[in-house]
Image (cartoon, rainbow, N blue to C red; front, side):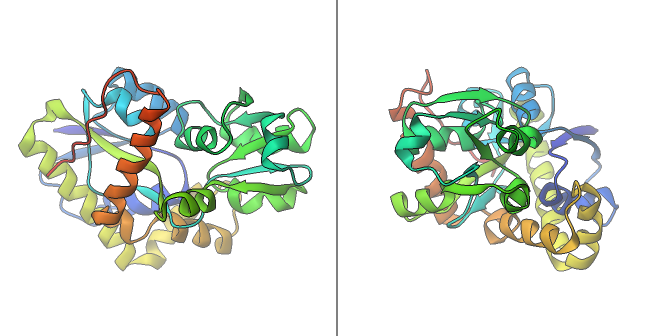
Length: 275
């Protein structure tokens, strides 16, 4: 059976799926077709159920919960760090609320959490890898930065105004859950367990063979040097990636409850994990 697996073309996702892509693990009779797209595209595709298994923003999950179930691993969580807002000079919360902020997509968790932190603000959607340039070149007052831009913004001469991971930790005492992996419910319970087991094993083997997995991840580094790529992977592939655990599930529930209180979702949120 062919499983279409969607993930972002980033070092952390590449690291997680190295063992699977390199044939290092048993796949339980499944053949995985890797589909690499940016997270906003994967979010939009999930609305139509285009992939069997896919990474999506946690913010998107309630919109697709009837079609997909959460896998209990593969999450990107930052403990005290996360997406950041940058500008050409430091701006206060009040100044950010009065600014136009370039964002990488309305369906990203980063945008949702920024709404929680600032309230209403003016924004404009641009591809995630163009946010820094929009701010640097003066086309936007500030920018919401995800992925490796969290580590490279200073090289563009920009200043950090707000770290959403820090803000969330002070608010809740919890790590900030950003991305999750989901699988189509129609695969059936047995296949869902097989898919979950294979992907969990891929993460485990990658962590056990870090040097080899990092060499593969560097192919997706978009110009990151080895040190920055390793730092980025360390931020988002950790013990919470292997399994949410009690703390990770609590963080997911807290974030989605707060989103629901803002009226973001029309239907009640149902958190259902593959066993």
